Amino acid sequence: MEQESLVECSFLIPVLRNTNRAPHEPITWREFQNELQRMSKDFSGPQTHRIVPFMEVETVPGQCAGVPDESRKYFLAVPKNRLKDIRSFLEAQLTRFDQESIYLAVAGAVEFIERGAPSSPRSQSSQIGAQENESISTDHGEASRPC
Image 1 (cartoon, one colour):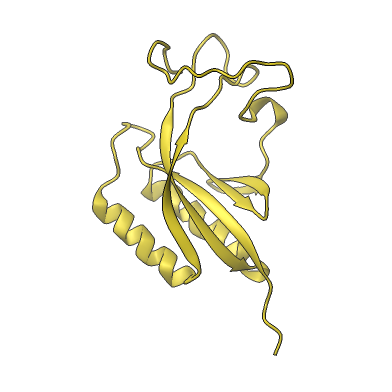
Image 2 (image 1 turned 60 degrees about the vertical axis):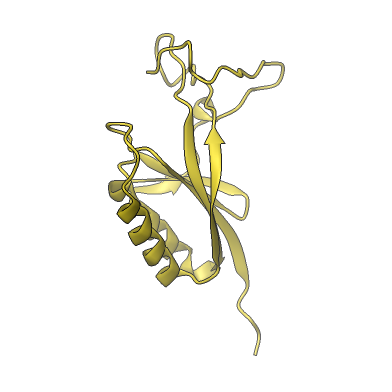
């Protein structure tokens, strides 16, 4: 019998809530991991992942700086026919973790899971990182104001 091929998925869950920047309760993480384990036994994580965002010039009017954030990163091995289930699962986590979107990478392709919207890549103007010949800020938000 041939084994079903799997694709690697990874996603990030920020450790702070969006609305009040408070950390999630331990019970929230336990319930999440229990549900994740019921969905896929082939996962690892969390790994701590620090995100240092760059200003999104065309997306955010005025001068402001991104807010540094720390996330928990998870990896899963998922059969291709279950990718829709993973996306639905992550969409349900938006409310639990008080997030606007969740970063999901499927076999190297990046998606953003958002409420009620099909997952899709962001516009080029909102991509994280520097374009060719741009400098990358190492400011971690200490001296700048968040949007």
